[in-house]
Length: 115
Length: 111
Image (cartoon, rainbow over all chains, first blue to last red; front, side, top):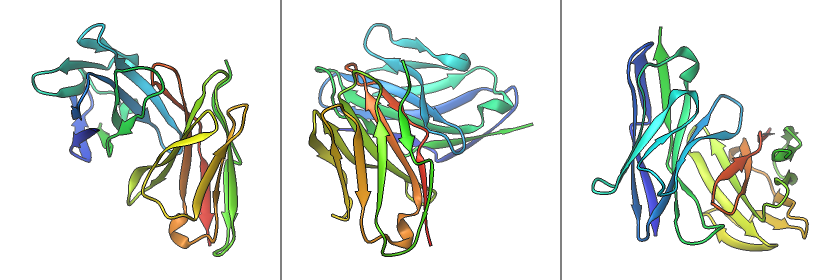
């Protein structure tokens, strides 16, 4: 069984401030972990993914996430928020045991960037 | 490679009608998943097909069904439409490393 919990359905930050979006996972086997971003009226697109190669993962648009096994967390961060970062962000998990495994998504966090 | 395509992009139907949505995955991807997204319920998993077989199913009524063809293209059907079925329907195809690639979605409005 696997699941992800995203703390905070809405997060507001000032432009230039640190972005921190929280994700905790539950998985009975070593996981793959993903962060996706969705802009209004579009599909989701991959920001970054953890596949056990390195615990600190860098993604597109200056985002990064750190896999912490002891805390079962995979929080998404960006040092300085930009207006264009306003979107909805989804954390997702799948088993790290073979291909084409089921992917489970969190409920999403809407990020608002205040000028 | 071409991305995931979904047709149509927009649909307007009336209550009681049925609708069929289509999804063409990225070439070589064998798994296709469908999601319903609404402002109230967020992103909800409908079902997943792999090599023409439904492998996983979310908690939706039997009015929601799907299928996958031998070329991995997938369709989903909703019968006896209700107002609450108005949503963005997203299709995603999976790579062997479980990365999901999403299409732009079909916006269904039920009047």
